[in-house]
Amino acid sequence: MTRASGDWWTLVVPEAGPGTDYGFLLDGEGPFPDPRSASQPNGVHGLSRLVDHDAFAWNDQAFEASPLPDAVLYELHVGTFTERGTFDAAIERLDHLVALGVTHVELLPIVEFPGDRGWGYDGVDLFAPHHALGGPDGLKHFVDACHGRGLAVVLDVVYNHLGPDGNYLARYGPYFSERYRTPWGEALNFDGPGAVEVRRFVIDNARHWVETYHVDALRLDAVHEIFDRSAIHILEELGAALDADALRLRRAVCVIAESDLNDPRLVRDVAGGGYGLDAQWNDDFRHSLHVALTGERDDYHSQYRGIHDLAAALHRIFVFDDRYSAYRGRRHGRPVPPDIPTSRFVGFLQNHDQVGNRPFGERSGHLLTTDQLRTAAALVILGPFVPLLFFGEEWAASTPFRYFTDHRDPVLAEAVRRGRREEFKAFVRKAGELPDPQNPATRDVSRLDWAELEREPHRSMLDWHRRLLAYRRAHSELRSGARPSVRYDEAACWLTMDQGPIKLAANLSPEAHPVPLDQPGPWTIDLASADDVRLGDFAIDIPAWSVAVLRRRA
Image 1: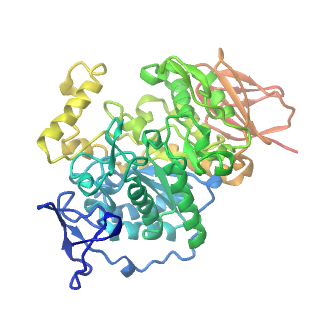
Image 2 (image 1 turned 180 degrees about the horizontal axis):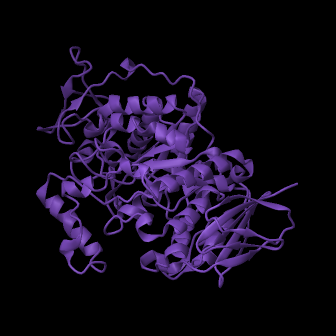
Image 3 (image 1 turned 90 degrees about the horizontal axis):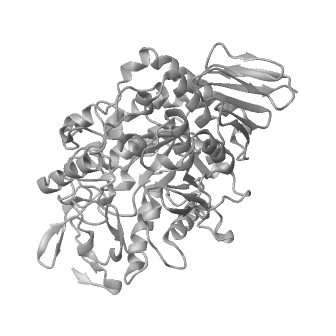
């Protein structure tokens, strides 16, 4: 190869074309995969393959994604969404999502990672859809099929680290920083010598998914582990690049961040000193809701006060908004200014972390009663945030979602096992009781059982979710981005949330309670999770662990 400007190396191979396999020799070693490989048909250590992206015939020219305030996100793992675990198999279940009422399908990371099964957060070939899921054409078919049904596609991308196995990126340049460290390995070099091309690599990757694969939004994993002291942060630069692409392509493109910082500057406009991203996940809402429902006070849950903090999250967005956190031993977070709408935040009860990082992958359906699940669904779907459902949540799937891997390096495989045993030693009596992440059965038991849809209580739970989503779709007040008025009684464990003429009244206790109505009616009950809800002149009687949705008639 010939060295060109900027330390780029080039070689023209006239006979190479689509389907050609190739690799790079570096200082006499290799061949190694191309860092921008479009396809890795033989895994992370195999040769790269050229792909003609223009050969795919798209049929989505008329598609328009729902605006984010109107969105309902559905997070799924392609490998366990269906029995076959491929993009093509997932297409066969898209009509279920349309009937459910979701608008955006959010895929856990799908780039090439070691082995044939895993969550995808240890990916190493960031431009290559995983071969076991269906590769480049499989992803294109999936996106095209989603758009044909009116569904947008969100891709979960990881820019804070790369996985340890098959990670050859450091051989190509100063892609990693010695100044920072993430919990999962080396941090990317966004602000040191040579960072110009590292930043370009990541931004080109984000643009690649939008332009080449027609993806509508990106979910950025754990941005609090992205380290950058530049005056223009990499997140701001990335957001601006995708905004420019959206204008050029004449379609909406969103960037949603996961962050542990409780910092609203992520979603504040650049002109106002922010990064200009479109939305961020709200863990405070999830944690306070989980504590209010389960009473769990382990680990990070210990800092939440159940219904008190749930009310705070519904109205203030963050519970910890420059408030002292005993768990962290310091003040944490920053208040969300009133001019930032609640629709810039994503609310949920479950996601891959909150389910899969439990020792046995227990879903909320394993921890809560049917009544509690119904109440939680109402608070998530009719709450002020953009709702996110975790695949199978809509019917209270009985299958767990466990952490699983397929590392072919025996040393790394044993390190993963040992790490899980150490992490959860306080939760189990014997380490052998933990599911082995390397055992294929750990993945197999995590696959959804679609036959459950025909049985109770799953069928009724699915109907409840459909009704809630239809109600949210029918009432713009629930999608306005305005902060609701919230009242609660911590001792009696009831809570009300008013959004325009709509009032949600929830009883989060094991006993029936009258919930006072602080506003004059007349009221009508539009939805109720229990049959024996009774509406009076000044209060509504709600059974234990139940919710009612009222509307004030003009």
